[in-house]
Every structure is written in C-alpha cells, then in structure tokens.
Length: 187
Image (cartoon, rainbow, N blue to C red; front, side, top):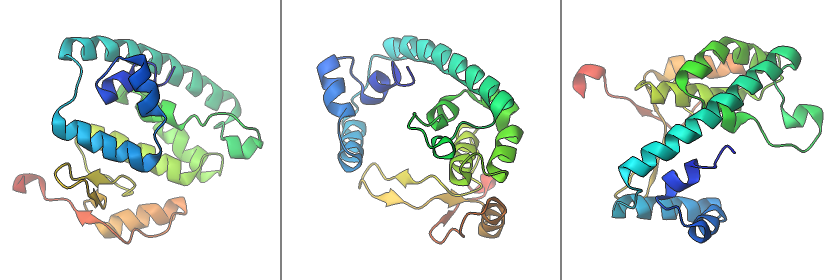
C-alpha cells in the first residue's frame, strides 16, 4: 500500500495502464520520464492530488506506527539481517510524515550504530527529513536533478567537514562530490 496513491500523484495520472507502464520502467528511464513530465507540467488536478495524498498519508501513518512497534519489540527488521526475502521497511520511513518520524529518530540511530539498520539507509532517511523541513542535508545522501538539463547534481551540504565527521560516525566513507549550500541570508 506504500505506493497506492503516491504513484498516481508522482506521475500525474490515474490511468491504470499508464501507471503500470511507468512503474515498470528501469531507473534510467524513470528519471528521464520524470524530468520530461516535470518540464511539460504533467500533473493531476490539485484537488484530486490533495484528496489522494490525504488517503496516502493515512496509510503512511498506519505503516510507520506498526513499524515503530516492531522496532521497539524486535529491533530494526532489515531483510539482510534475517537472511529472508521480504520488502525493506525503508520506504515506510521515507514516506512518514515528519511528526511520525521524529519520535523514532534516536531509536533508528541506535539501530544503525548497532548494525541492525544499514547506516546508509539511516543517513538517507535523516537527510530526506531535513530537506522536507527546509534544511540542508547532513550526510549528503540525496542528489538533485536540474530540470532544464536533466543533469544529476551532487548533494548540497552546509559544511563538508561536519558532513564527513557525521558520515564517519556512522561508518560511511567521506563525501567526495558535493555542493556547499548558500547561507540562509544569501538566498
């Protein structure tokens, strides 16, 4: 259910055949199609988009609530840790609303430090939540796309020394390609 309504909003269509075609694209084709649709302004009617995202947010809240119960009871359910093939719980955390994610953040850090959650996954989710709060990434895990050129841009961080220190504390290698974010008063 993680993508039940999100795919329609992302792609700007509710046509099931078109959604099936788009969801089946490989990573490169997905990025090209996403850039094309952004350039062309392909989007759902804002009222329909708001309605679908309200439904998706209810699903996301239920998912993150259940995942929090599992983590508290048994630790982070990383498929690699259990050597069992089941979907990663990372999308649940990525899609969680900030108010639902924040109470779990310190627990997730402990899970990553204990090796029960992949450090790269923790860093990516942490960075995404910062970005959704209008802040700059700490770990430098997320890239940007230049809509005009379709070019992938390196992550934007505030201070490369602080970023590399935080990455080292999680056991991640230093960030070699990056952009320094403009100071708030320069924007």
